[in-house]
Length: 325
Image 1: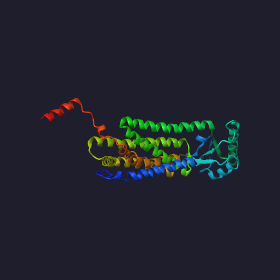
Image 2: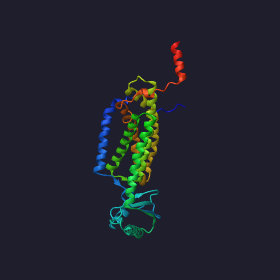
Image 3: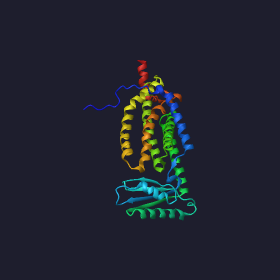
Image 4: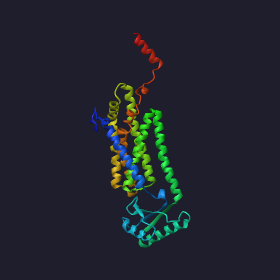
């Protein structure tokens, strides 16, 4: 049986021909993303700004009355609730910001939780309160700092690893590609207003891992070709390396996208942001491996001779024997 080839043999696409326009576009998108984050801001979830989450199951209903609940809870005077389904259609989570002064007086948060749960039970006899979780403002700030510190340290560790395995130019290229991927993902959440919580931080760390994996595959082939074709111009060598890894890249990306698209269309709302972040990450991670991580090696003037293997004593003896003959 003949295997299906998504990329024909001897594919020769001139990716690096468009490296300058794509770099300009990427830098503009990165600047726009940071502009949106700094001006519009992220819709931070309870994890980062503090608040309460009440989990409710409607035992005798096939589906939770989300719209009705939103209006009822909003009338209690604690602000607009964020209500999401999770698990089954009749299971929801209600997220609320903590009332003013709750940081100094914990009883205010407890009173809000009791008021909301009592109102839900009063209006919905089949409502079962599965749990009430509260995050204080101080704890949420610590979570936010730890989350972004994890992203920064992960990116730096990745750059250091690639620096040690290849050359410093490769480490710079990988770090720039990771910053590009994370920045565009943050821009997506800033422009759409989707909730940004610890689940999204987990998605960003997953994205860093995926992008790193794809970048290392391309870099490894570049290193092999630099040993084989020492006199080939760098743009041609990079094009050759990207084309040789293109089949693997497309198969891996498509395999993940099939699952992610199914989760986007059929999955619960509670993981929609997580899935959307990784879905975007598949595209920008693949793009950055080709148009961010590879072209920067030209501008940083990586030295092909640094990848020539050292001649052993036996190989030197054999070479001198051949030259003497």
